[in-house]
Length: 497
Image 1 (cartoon, rainbow, N blue to C red):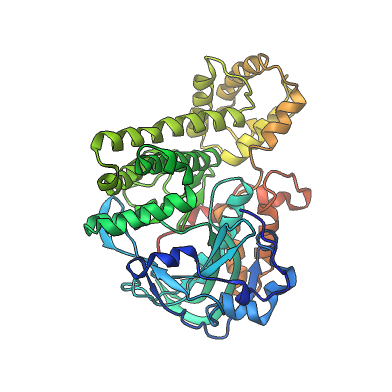
Image 2 (image 1 turned 45 degrees about the horizontal axis):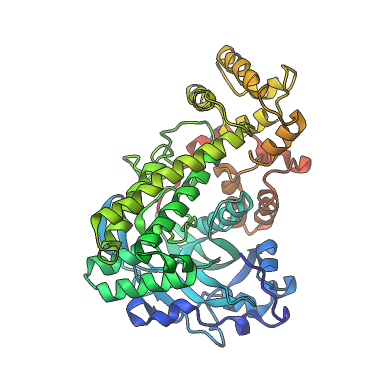
């Protein structure tokens, strides 16, 4: 995201302008105002993102920002809107969907003309709310706020979270809960389902208009291609494959990889029932609603492939032939395998390539699976390993039940490391910058949520501080890297938010 350099003391409400997406016309969205949130209050903001957006720190806590980012004020130079889209949900065509509780306030523009869209999630009813109330609950809003910024710090393509505001106003899910609004940002919130919407309605002129907009704004190099729409699909396949390879590398599980939740720019979008792998189980399902395990950790790469095929179907009228469409779609699997090979090699500190690498890596994941060892802590301990057996081995072996099996693997691993040309210190430094010490574990999020529900928001900001430096040791916050307590085994996250 490019840094913005306006007059930093200009009020945020005066800096927002209509996004370029709004130029597409009424077929793509509905203009409307957010529904005011009753007596909103400030909870937290991302200082890092505010700085990147050129927003002075002191402006984030002003009354102007509070009323704007809770939906109680309209920008001076922008007209908010909610976008329409459709999509496949859990593999089934769901028809028209859209921004049911998200409203695009406008955009901030940098000196090079690049936009950052500003969207409020939980800002009230829209024409696309269906049976919903257009609100977001505090619990899920805290999770999205924290995870968006945590993912960015991990180097994973994602939407971002600027601010979190709350209210005593009640909303009703399984039980009554208080409401909140997350201010999130992205270069664009266009989804695979945005294209599916016009394809399945046979509105091919709007489909072409949307594709041309995306190409011109985000993929201009496609215009040099013989078939720009085929080139667009290739770009989206490649970005999506890279994003999901990053997810797998850190054990992130999205939970609801519906086509309406898939970003056309390859950004992690719509944080709902997500989770980070703890006790490793490739079949782990982080979404309690997903009874069939469609979106398990193991399935994410293949679901990404399924989703780009759904997008390819929607783009077929523009690409012109099944053969060219399938040729473009083949780039997904190729790119995923390449990125996974690169990322997994980096996790094991392998700078060179050897024939035995894939088997060695696969065997370690099998050990993780058989022992249900903590994924994050296992790779972090592996990063500290010495070239020769030492006391550092204990931090890793303590995570495994089958220590003999691990010891045999470590012998092979050290034999492989002996073929590396870089120094042991350089390897460790690279691995520690690849394998995070801190991720947003469910129990950490739950602790912050429970305190916030009692009116104490300090844990949100403290946890954000830790998560924005995931590769640093941070001795004062060592406990945030601890294994989950027994009570955390009962935590469940569902689509209800």
